[in-house]
Every structure is written in C-alpha cells, then in structure tokens.
Image (tube, rainbow, N blue to C red; front, side, top):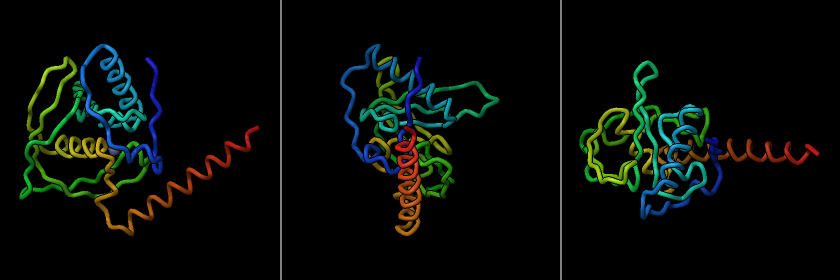
Length: 178
Ligand SMILES: [Zn+2]
C-alpha cells in the first residue's frame, strides 16, 4: 500500500469543490485504505480526499487516543443534517495541509450527519466534542473551505503569506538541485 502525498497551502487544488461518489467499489475502498494509512502516518485525526489531490467526497477520521483501540471512520458523501447553532464549542484546530499552524475556531458543539460507509451503506449518526469539530472541518475541505477562513482577514493573510513564501523557497531550492 503506497502513501499518498498531502498537498499544503497555498496549493489551489485545496480550494476545489469535491464531487459526490456514485458507487462504492473495491477501487474506492482501496483508495480509502491508502487515505487512512496516509492519515495515520502523518499523523493526523482527519483527512479529506482533496488533501491528497482527489476531488472526491471522501473523508477518513479517527479521533481515538493512542492508547485506545483504533476506530477509523470512513465517510463518503457526508452531509450535515443538523447542528447545534446555540451550543458552540471552541477547539484549537490544525490541518495536515497547513502544517505546524494552530488557531482557535468556534463551531457548533453537536452535529447530526448522514454518510455512506465503507460497505456502501447509508448511515446516520450524531457527534459532539472533538469528533463533531473534526467532521465539520473535513466536510469544509470537500467544499474548498479551510479552517483559516474562520480567522480574521489579517491572521489569514499572514498565514497564506508565510506558506506562499515557504513554497516559493522550496521550489527555488529544487531548481538548484541539478
Ligand atoms: Zn484540514
């Protein structure tokens, strides 16, 4: 099983809107297995397919603590059905596509969502705490939204600038390795 490459800011692919999955077949499952491995290796607790360059509505999540059993979640075509707009919670979020940057984001504390699972069956469940935050963060990715979009314009511009500069420097170095 190969490891996929995670795209980082300011890659414009991250701003693409992902398309719905029509059928869940073995190729889809193989891709989801690769996504999960990539997420665990990173390490991270959530990954959207667009972060590895695939504009498809697929997410892998595992918010279990290290000492607990691994409990991966595969969400295909996930949709938020309800969120607790009055009850909100704040988490310091990070993102595998924005390495080593963290900021507090406020979101609804609870969500109910629908999705297609690994076997291709439709499921519905509720989440709160870290899982609720993670599901919302990952579904945002499918719509080209990043958590830095919730920050002030000033903060966001600073982060984008920093990553743009770093990407340019990396490219410059690459071009000198003849
Ligand atoms: Zn992310």
